[in-house]
Structure formats: structure tokens, C-alpha cells
Image 1: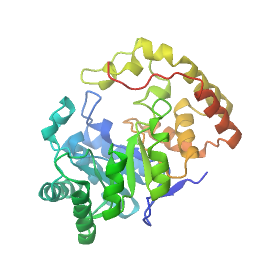
Image 2: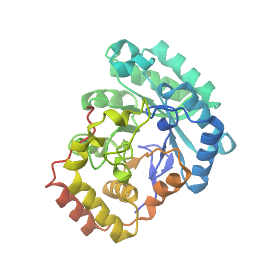
Image 3: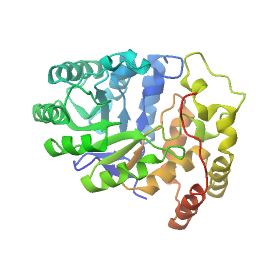
Image 4: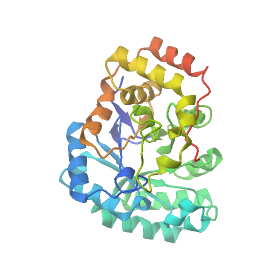
Amino acid sequence: MEKTRKLGQTEIEIAAIGYGCMGQTHSYGVVEAEEDMVSLMQYAHEVGYTFFDTAPIYGEANERYLGKAVAPFRNETVIATKFGIVDESFFAGNAEALSSSHESILEQVDASLKRLGTDYIDLYYQHRIDPKTEPEEVAETMAELIKAGKIRAWGVSFAPVEYIRRAHRVCKISAVENMYSFVARNDEETYFPLCEELGITYVSACPLAKGYLSNRYSVGTKYREGDWRADINLFQKEGIDANLDLMELILDFADRKQATPAQIALAWEITKKPYLVPIPGTTKKDRVKENFDAVTVELTETEMREIEEALSHMDIVGMGRG
């Protein structure tokens, strides 16, 4: 399989597997130490990662960690960060925490550039759409930022298909970042055809379903306070029991390929579509290498068909909150 991908219709090239920074400071009940995370991401670069995904709403430290880590080799990396969510209360359902007005975006991009310690962002996502701002207006602001050299390309995350079409007509969208994995496949019928039609890269968030597909969690696993997995159906007894067939399938292929379950989950994604880029995250050095080494796991067309056939007969429990 190709081990690199073009970002949308740009000339920007990225490795087929990227690194998601979120878990360093958000969602898992701890903010990791800067020194440790900077060292980890520099190691990730050594291993072969070129694409790093962050966002200010993951905690302002998240962008700072990344900026410091890649400073020595900035021109060899592609940084993706985001705008649009301006307050942590968004996660509690506050719609007022969304802002994508022209003035707000200009403030947000400058703040991100400062935290990242760089003068340009390679890929700038609208993290969530702002109901108060039309897609055309957002796209016009992105065109302005591209012309000014502050960003090289832009994308959207969890945006409706028609919103993407409208925005794309004004300023080409290079990437869509949504949740996709063995346990979250709805986008195959909607966003995959859209990406193929418009030449957009599909960035797969949570490709390991917050670690579930690594097969390292069980019913008795204890989670830290603030770790979202404690409230996700997938990690409860019902979810684990319901997905036994899926895990058996993954373990079978892991055995066949002398690979880990996580590597099978990632290899399946990058083999499935040439425009698909998973961005697993981890704070552990061995996992950094394990995840990236999935690019060496070869799944044949026959094996991919076997996996798809098996999946078609499974009633899979996804990542809903309990």
C-alpha cells in the first residue's frame, strides 16, 4: 500500500498514519508533563510520523507541546489545529461555546500561531460548525488566511455534507475529520463518496476507538477520574460482550499477520481507501512505534473482502455514552 497520502488537492504530502495529540491533555483524566510529551513527539517524528493533529480546546498546553516538539524540524512536519470551539462548556452542551465569525477566527488563528510558535498552520479545521455563521463566510475567511500565508489548507470536522459542499465551492476543503473505525462505520455511505467526488482527504479520528480496538481493556479495567472511557458503552460489559465476534476477527488477523490488534485496525483503514488517514493518539513510546508500524502490515484484496464480509454479519456496539 502507499505509505504516504496527498492532503486533498494540495501538494502537501503526509504519512498514511498521523499522530493525534488530544489525549496528552484532554479526555483521559490527566495532563501529561510537557517534557515527556515533547520527547514523545520528537520520537514519533524519528519513527516516521509527519502529520500531527491538535486543537486549542484540548487545553492550551496541547498546542504548546506540539509547537515545541516540532520546532527543530518544522518544515518536515504538517501541523493540523482547529478553530470554532471557544469554550470547554461546549462539551456540556453549550452552543454559545461555538464561534466562527470572521473576527473570531482571526483572533483564534493568531492565538494558535503564538502557542504553536510558528508563522503558519498547514491544515486549519473548523472543529464544529457555528450555526450563526454561513459556510460561505467561513470559507471566505479561510481563503483570506491562505492568501495571507497564515494557513496552507483548511478542513472541517463533523460538518454536514451540504455544509461541506457549500463551503468547498468558495474555497476548496482539503480534509474532513470525523470518527471512523471498526465500531463506527456510518461515514462509508455518506462522507466517503463525498471525499472521492471532491478530492478531499478523510482523516479518521479515534481509529482505535479510544484504545478499545487494541484489546487491552476489559470489564474490570479501572479508569482515572475524568477519563471519558468510564462512561462509554463500548468499555462496559454490555459493549465488550456484544463485540466479541469483532474482537475475535481482529485477533485472528493479528495472529495471521504477526501483528497486534491495533495494527490490524489501522492497516484495515489505510488499505480500505487511498485518501484515508487515521490519527491514533497515545502517550506511550512503545505504542507510538506500534501504531506507525501498521503501515508495514499488508492486507490483500481477498483478506479485505473477508473482513468486510464478516463485518456485514455483525451487530456492532459503538461509542455512545452510557
